[in-house]
Image (cartoon, rainbow, N blue to C red):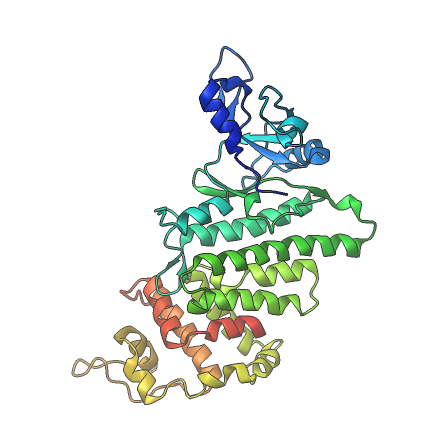
Length: 382
């Protein structure tokens, strides 16, 4: 499908010349349900003619805050301009879905941003030393959850690779043009494959979108690059639809600082649980963790801030003295990877139980600075 809100410039020129406003078809307009009441500001989105009614009905079947539901569908033609070529869509007619007004779709917005447009809510995309802007963090999670809910209605989208199917309404990123029914597929396996195809299509679109809008590309943003590398890796594991989506949606890149730090607690509990400890022990032997061996070298400890170092030296079995309140006889950590996991679990607990004066955002940032990639590898293997 072509860009959905294509402008017909030659028609606009004739419109300016002859002032026949009622004879011009455009992408934006007003919808009247009552001639005596105010109109609804609307956008008319072009769809393939044979699909207009079907797409309308399928969008209306999903009651979801992330799906922009259309008001109606309609067919429009333009025949009054003598200079209009016979083969143009305006003469042949265009099927449209009528949506509430949205300012931009993702394709248009990206073009604007790459031409120095600034959007205070959505920019910068990368914040806090590698974190994802809250708008995009919430929006991407909402998109994935929304697609799952579309599937739960027996539908699939079929066009999530197209940036024009993602639109901005107020302070939200929404989906338009749900196109397919899972009843089209005879077997359970084919339906699951199509559902997974929706998610991989969305991830493909986001991967290319980040590459196009992040200065220097994703390689200059390790956390972002790790997320899409992980999504591609998970796609090779042969997981079922639900497990695949769960493993993508729960990635640290899409979590808040507090939720990221909480994962260390989750993995440490698995490490000491009799039913899962062998799995964790085996995972930590992977070469992916080699760079985290000897994590508590003298140079690393020297680069830690006072809060991280205080937790490192904390010994609950030895009381501080008034002469030297920070003195401890010994530390309790070795240089192995499991000790790093235990330390980061303790760091998270100290924040919540000992009320560290720094914010969780600062704790998370310092962990990612000191031990960048460690949580992502834990998530990959566990």
